[in-house]
Image (cartoon, each protein chain N blue to C red):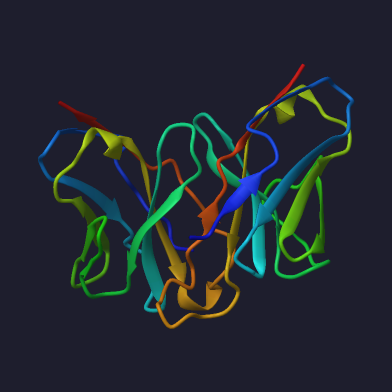
Length: 112
Length: 118
């Protein structure tokens, strides 16, 4: 799996957009970008994934740069319940179902 | 919704005891995983299984063993618990094949078991 780099922590005001960056400069052509989050005392939760096109679901949007060397997870209207550690993971298509490698992630603190 | 359950949320054991952590998933997933999570170290993979009676070592298998006799159940065993095995243990499952929805790599996690070894 390609290595990812994320800031250790970020703050966001409730109701504002939270933009979480991730660098993956060594990503290869068959590798996807995945995002998970972990709310305190719970197991990690899948958020979204993408290859090269921007993606959106009910939880978040994922913006991947054209060269695919970085991406941004966007929570459009952050709430207090979005306070969590967010993990960016890069892994290949042919590793479907195999073990994820989690780094240290970004701790997002949403405050009122 | 996929549900992954773990037998205990909190467990306290003594050094040298044999400890069983149980995980059950209800979505017929082929793959199951055991991770441990420690402050400052993130999640680390202990063991995983692709099928019944199949197992593969992860990054930190020492001191642990696993058992998968049925597809829905994956057990983590600490043969002789030690204080350095005090940790949060997380079980996960995922499909082993591709799905039309594209979430073929999504892993579903249980709530975790916080194990303390005294």
